[in-house]
Image (tube, rainbow, N blue to C red):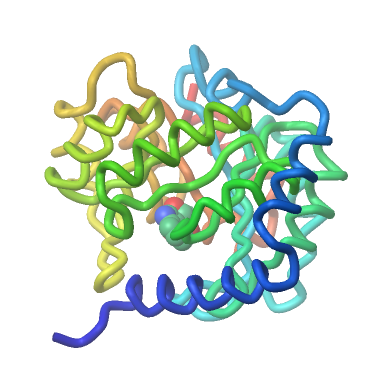
Length: 264
Ligand SMILES: O=P(O)(O)OC[C@@H](O)[C@@H](O)c1c[nH]c2ccccc12
């Protein structure tokens, strides 16, 4: 069978991590993490709890499904607008080849805003969790389709040790069961199928009832405006993660205000 885009990105990411590791071995990266001050702990989770519907706004220049989303990519303005408009958290893509992200962009934004940040990358190695910690992230992404249950559990433990939250992403019943049994406290259901890019809110609705009440439920992808936010709230999401609609917006402030209103 043809390799899916997700597998292609994962394979490329493994090579990227190997290069990073050659430049900075894990032991040294670990030492550097050890010298960091107090980590975010539950800041990411706390920011999304008890808020009605939490808003996670994403900074991304491009995506494999849509190509370039923002030609000039004024990422610092974007991130500052998110914070000013009352976003609860920021997600920032760091994958360089398909999303045109970078650790540099992440770091610049980290220095410019105070709200919790998710380092959005394709986690295939614990090395990336230490990297996220060093970048000042409060959270990482763990995609179930790329990791078995034991690995997810192990990474969650490491996140706990480093003071990071993790959004564990599932797309169907099997992946969701894996996220739950690994002990995830934040589960994201991606409305976009990363295997063929199709978007369907029915996924978020269908999987809702299988998510334990104590787990924070994030509906991800495919939001086109306030009506979608209201719909995901009705479905029972605790937070939404959206990117493209914001990156393309002509009047970001106005759109964010409308989205915030719909999330109340
Ligand atoms: O731009 P959108 O459709 O609003 O989606 C944002 C976010 O959910 C999406 O970027 C995403 C969700 N899960 C991912 C995993 C990897 C890369 C990207 C993603």
